[in-house]
Image 1 (cartoon, one colour):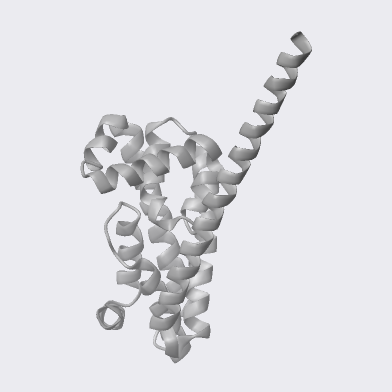
Image 2 (image 1 turned 30 degrees about the vertical axis):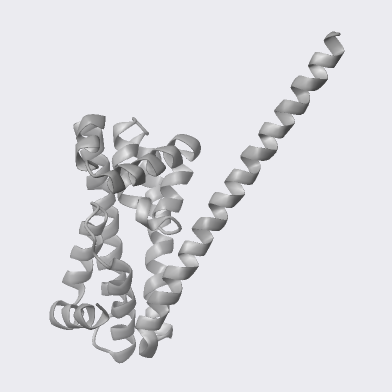
Length: 207
């Protein structure tokens, strides 16, 4: 995989970085993070220019997110459900819907980098469920700033070990996502137990 990505970046430069960032935001299985790591590495070797790599990745990601939002907004829930016709995609869609329902714009922000696999589906759901465009755009821009900065920066720092960094970052993101889910579950359980105690106290007081 890494050899193919390096060859594409070598041949097409920032154009392939832009295209991969855009298409990945529409739920196409493209290794955009590795593309950005490679772009950063080629900046270090002098083959690419830093601002062009950042601009290509950032523009592709933001425009792709906006396109996904527009698909959800104008196509509505039926179209989104049709896109997620397989059981695996439907499961991811449900996770994205819960993220948006619970956190709104904050869910959009974290889906761009912390929960990146959910990102395209969050775009669709945000549009379909009526999340305000200005709110979506603000959190999306902030989130993509984090995503692009981290991966291009790591590509520059670890230019000779891009493949290894990609593996490590995949594990780190997975760990952070699991940690966030566990934290959310802990908060929910704590709230449920508190409500149960309050109900018991109310029932005792009523006797």
